[in-house]
Image 1 (cartoon, one colour):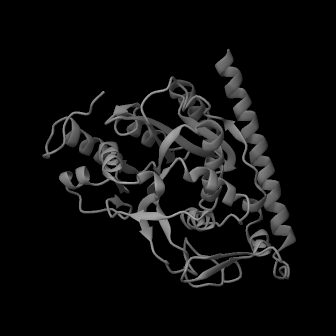
Image 2 (cartoon, rainbow, N blue to C red):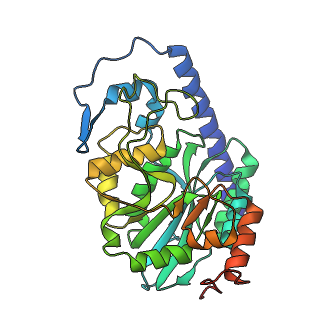
Length: 340
C-alpha cells in the first residue's frame, strides 16, 4: 500500500508540474522578447589570466529566466545513497540520466555502477534525473528507486538547457546528503566507465584531491548556431573559460563547497559543461587534464577500453561486451576479475 501511495503522489506531482511548465511557457510566448534590459550593475567579471569574462545577470534573466529562478526541489531525495557505517574512502559515481533511460541504468548497474569496495575505495552510484512528460517513465523510475535506492529526482523538466540546473542542484545535494564522498565522478548514462582505472589513477596521482580532473577544453570557441548556440546578447565574447568536458570528470570533496557557493552568485549558463567552467573559475580551483577521459569516443578496440577512464557514446550491448571481455574473460593483459 505504501508503494502505491508513493506512486499516486508522484504521478499527481508530475501532472501538476507539467501544467505549471506549460503555463510558464505560454506566459513567456505571450510576453515576447521585449526591448531587453540595460546592463546590470551587478555583472560578474571573472579573469583567468588571459581573458576577463563578463556575465550580465540581466541578459540571463531575459533569455533564460527559468534557469535563473529555479530553486532545487527533490521529488526523490536519494537520502540513502551515501548512508552506511564508516569505511574506505567513498568514490561516488554521479550519472546524468533521463527517466526513459531505464535500460541504460540497468546496464550500468550490471557492469560498472554496482556498489562494492574496489582498490581501497568504496563505490556507490547515483542517477540524477528530471521529470519526463510520460507518466509511465515516472512510475518505472519510482519502482527503480524503491528497489535500488540510487535515484535523485528533481522537479525540473528534462531538456538540454536544464542540464545546468542538474549541475547546480547536484552540488547542493552532495553538500547536504553526501558530504563524506572523497571523490565524485560525474558522467552520462550513455558511456562505458572504468572504475578500476579511475581508482588506480587516484591512488597514483599526487595531490589528486587538490584539482579537478578531466578532458579539459582550453578556451573553446563560442558557437552561434546549432544545438550549442549561444547568442551574442547573452555572451558577446568569442571564447569560453577552460572547462572539463561534461562527458566525464572527477572532482574532490574539497571542491564542492566552493563550487556550490559560486553557483549562488553567478548566473546559470545554459550549457552545463561551460557552466561548470565558470563555477570553477569563480571558485578559484584548478584542473588536471588527462586524455584517458575519452569524452569524444575512440577506436573501438577492447584493450583500449581497459586503458580509458571512460568512453562516451557506447551502445548498451557494447558496454556489456567490453565489461565481460576485460573483467570476466580477461582478454587483455593487466585486467582480471574485480575484487568484491
